Length: 101
Image (cartoon, rainbow, N blue to C red; front, side):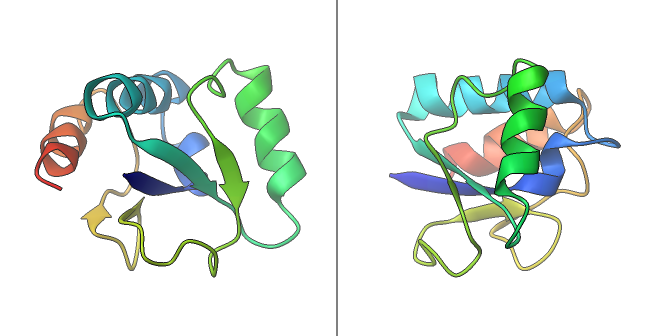
């Protein structure tokens, strides 16, 4: 199965550590492919950000919003799993929502 994650959840006010933890859990516990959904023209910026902050290990691909539209999505708007930001406090909600997919 595949999960799309809105790229803005990698940057503050989200915690890079929380993002990395969530992607680790999704990959290891559920075996999901993780797609980081970036707005057009921002792929290289987000890739550099996650790579520089050590949060890239579990990302399979960077995609545009119109790609892989059938996959569930985690994001701040128009998402199956709605979170404003990924923090230590929001990890339990995000994980329980993912486990119910």
